[in-house]
Image 1: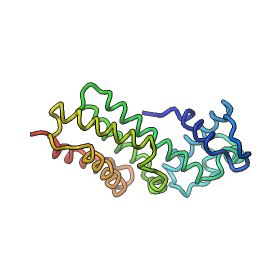
Image 2 (image 1 turned 90 degrees about the horizontal axis):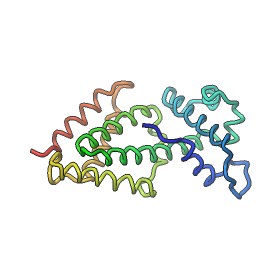
Image 3 (image 1 turned 180 degrees about the vertical axis):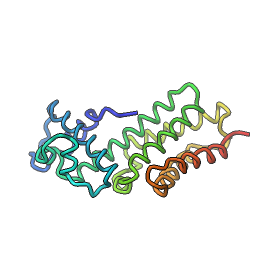
Image 4 (image 1 turned 45 degrees about the horizontal axis):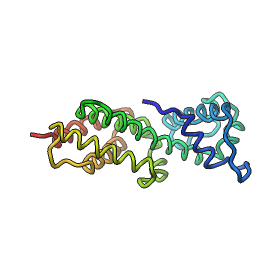
Length: 206
């Protein structure tokens, strides 16, 4: 599942203008948004391979753009990580919405937890650099939490999960998945997948 990067970056750019811009933000041009999407996609790929210590030159090379072009849109790696963190939140919310829309709550929940594990595994090498940039109180995160609560309740009502299971239990499982991913060998998804299976079994209705 992939978010429309340009739509989120449009919001970010108008809210936080580049370092050399005036104090009055202007709507970004279409070609600028296209470059932003290319830059952020390249940054995600390079950070996933090299970690947050990756150079702006490596990101520019992956994007096929000049380093100057990147600095005109993002002040540096910190600004890129901020943009990626915002995308992280938006993509997680879209995944929760897709899971909630599944007519089978059990399938939707299992898919969502698999998405969480895969999503975190892709960011294993730079996840720690994103954590401090994420807030649980912003509008998108609050909406995601409500979707997880609704998804959990739907799975309970369908008889898939035990009656006493709550959204907080699933949110705790999500946090735990991140920890298992971080502690696992690079590229090894087996530990977190086993962890999810075991814990889902424990939450299942008798």
